[in-house]
Image: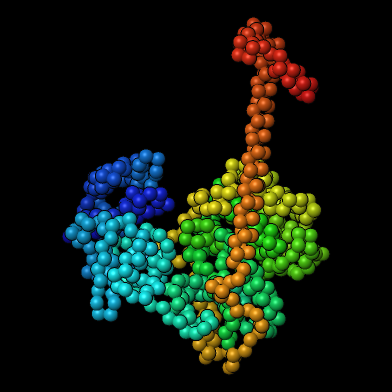
Length: 608
């Protein structure tokens, strides 16, 4: 008779150590185990931790479980915390195989009895060092314990089978451990030269491709961290005269410092490429997540839209016109917060200064961009409207497979909205998508004016900026959240150029001042000062929003009272006996009708 491991795996964000202790709880059960047996095992384990099952599966009590059809969902509650659990089967085998980011191993009943412990085996040469930790241990604590015992110069702990997802997760700080057992090896630092170069990185996987660039997931040999390496072919830069564009992108990325922008760690030239080493965002593109969801609810879209708007507020404050807002350029980190990337079309400017470049994605181009009469940062406000439209409907406004038709619609047609959208969001998008930039929402007060729209009345901007709000989307840590289709095209040519087998025969430089190393950044004090100013700016917007909301609530309350008085007055005229009773009640409650009757009279005049 075959046995199967049943384990509880997290499906939502866990808010306490107690909840975290439930992750990967193991049960060894046979394939004839019934649904009732599973319920009994779960209830026993969960109740010991103060939980109780709220919702059971719809299966019959005697339903037999099998490896293909035994995934069960439950909801449990402890105090006010709700956790959705998934029980899944794993066949017990005598071999170790890799599945996603989890390692499937031989498990015995004895192992399941110590399910509150984590076993870490570190391989150093021919030796093995065993560590046993409590379930609430974190990635940071494991690294510290290994460093303390082994006395080695270690920059990272890697799985012996080089599982990219687990290795990346282990480099993060203060993350709960999700696996009952880890087989690890040590990575020691390697420094190849005075300046950072391609030799300092191990290329792992292609995760993105653009018109003239490719993006690879890489691992640093210096510190063991994972980065995104953007490569731009020098041959393309020279042929199409894109040097100024690349220098501009490098300068802007070296200048900005914000929790919602991608951070550049290094930039340099190699023989065949211009290289950007960027922060790696394992959540992938917002576009990737949107394709999975089809479209977002207004509440989901509101969270991401506010994060994007606060970032745009910062960029405009820094004199940067972004000009390329779209879901493909918005990345998500492991927690689900955004990072705006790709500053290739950005431009340093003043609020009223005109630019004349024709650039951007067709679906997101503002009318003034298409007319080529000059544009200001108002193009970013239009793009914000187009982005919000795509988030809540699944497609950009005026979408068509025919680019010319898109352009004609942007210039000549009025945007239409699905009926399921609220009036507030329709009003917001109408203001942002106004064809005349002088009538567009934000023309007077910029992004600050946009964030004061009534659609944001329940949003605390400061809490979102400081990442106190839980994102509605949690990227799956068990997979790379990137669209890998067609990414292999041209990969062989790029790799041959990286190792010098193709491309230019000699090293040469296109730029005089392109090299950047974040460790030598002399602007960090200015960046931190400007970020503090930005936080104060967002705080002031929030305070102004709160005051406006208080006025709205007060006015709504006053109007409600007036309406009630009108109804009572109407009732008094139509039914004298009932009206007399209402008047007596009002007199007893208010001590007289003097003030209210004055408001009522003026209100009646307005209605008449």
